Amino acid sequence: MSEPARHTPIENAQGLVCGTMLVGLAVSLLLHLGLVTGQVAGVAALTSYVTGWSYGAVFFALNLPFYVFGWAKMGARFTLISLACVATVSLLTEWLPAVIPFGAVDPWAGSVWFGVMAGFGFIAIFRHGASMGGVGIVALWLQDATGFRAGWTQLIVDAGVFAAAFAILDPMLVLVSLPGTIILNLIIALNHRRDRYVAR
Image (cartoon, rainbow, N blue to C red):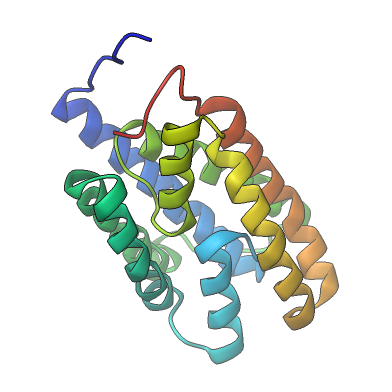
């Protein structure tokens, strides 16, 4: 397989900015609706709902241990850019409700829109040499090393997060959350492929 063409710095910058903006808006919608998702983002949401702590701060802190793995397996550049993406989304989730306040949103529609926005945001971030931290770092390394698609890895982990969510949240809220998480992972699984793009 030939080496994929490298993106220019400008292409990387616009991809990462657009990706983090989409993910930040998607997560803000998710939190507005009191829904949950998978991976570290889902754990952070559950923690925020139960404790009242800032989602952005919890999300940032929970991602920190994964950077050790990322530094060893994916390299310093990938890890530092991923850290910047996570920090940006953490800040956006604190700031966006003040500038883009959501009103009444149908939860089922909101769940679907979350999945679409977050899915394509993740794709943009992945294709420009980074991740949203957490399980995404492990999933991208596994995809590059074995070809096992990142979306499938994340879907497996998400099953565990949703099992915990059923024990914490109103079961109906968890059910409404499922379409968004499924759509998010299907977008990643179907669009981010080793034969088209690699994470580094």
